[in-house]
Amino acid sequence: AQKVTQAQTEISVVEKEDVTLDCVYETRDTTYYLFWYKQPPSGELVFLIRRNSFDEQNEISGRYSWNFQKSTSSFNFTITASQVVDSAVYFCALSEAGTGRRALTFGSGTRLQVQP
Amino acid sequence: NAGVTQTPKFRILKIGQSMTLQCAQDMNHNYMYWYRQDPGMGLKLIYYSVGAGITDKGEVPNGYNVSRSTTEDFPLRLELAAPSQTSVYFCASRTLDGGGAFFGQGTRLTVV
Image 1 (cartoon, rainbow over the protein chains, first blue to last red):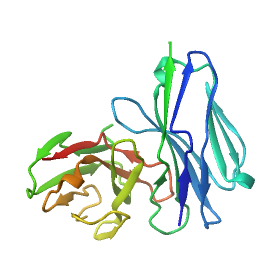
Image 2 (cartoon, each protein chain N blue to C red):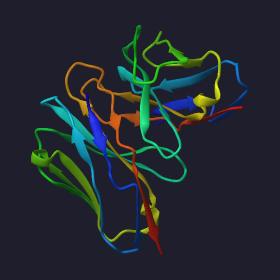
Image 3 (tube, rainbow over the protein chains, first blue to last red):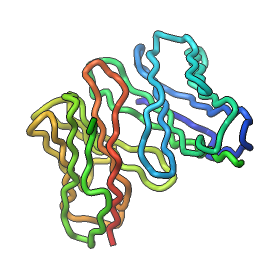
């Protein structure tokens, strides 16, 4: 069975601080995908990134960066120079890459509050 | 650019009533999913479909039914609403090659 753990329930930072959201996963699949989604106060789910299990290169997109470490089963997300608009709940998710249902298994989310 | 469209956005049901949550996608995605999100929690899979005519249960299917007669539509049926079904429901679709899942705006359902 797949499992995603986001141990940080809530994080509060002051604007311009860097913040890292942790994600640890469990799976027996040898190939899989990892995801991050953002859920702002308006409630929709915004896709941020997808990562293949065979690609361990870190990725940077503007102020966002992701650190994938297969050896520790972690896929952490860092926001550099946080802004108030980053305030949201962030979900890490995992799915198989084979021919099965490919449904995403979600963590419980980390609520990020960025204070001005 | 419709993507995944869910209707209605909000609904209040009385205990024992029935309703159907509609979901439609215009991206020709094979995979479609229904999730529920309880307050302060992550999303849990109710039902999924890998193509027209094929559906299967997820982790929390009790009290729900689905059908998939076309690639575009994946309605979720609640037969006898119970307070435990108060939640936000999300429909999602995904491509065959395992790309990112695209979610609808959600339906906030309250059962009283």
